[in-house]
Image (cartoon, rainbow, N blue to C red; front, side):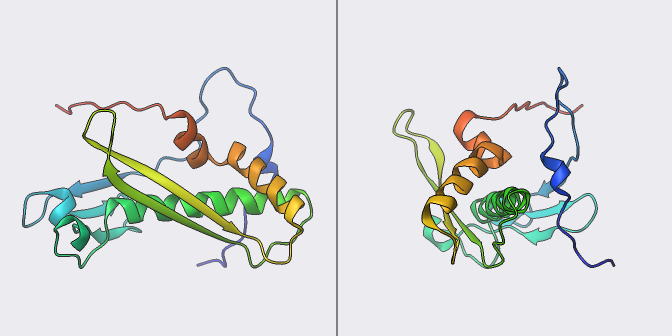
Length: 164
């Protein structure tokens, strides 16, 4: 396996097409496991086999724990994507941020509007050694670039369909 390398800064070049331009699709299949419930005892596996995790309800929600859960997976994805976007923008600005850290807290809770469920996200960025004003501008620009931040702010195109 080759040593991981950051993507080229040219990835920041804008797309000027009139249609969505797909670049990559991650596919994950979830089954229900012993409890026949994906969240309580499921398994999540990606089509390429790189993700293979056991899903478990956290103890805080009355589950047994002992596995990961959708909130942790979403937090990891959000933080990873934000860190990547932050790093790309810093590289374009010729700003070194080797010790940058992004922490995502994703909370599952009750929606006061409909009484059902919702998520909230708290994204915390640590940029040691970077001037506060420069860091704040970098974070603001990253919020505009990161697709997870955009999704959290503006929603996402989502199609739910019943397969034949």
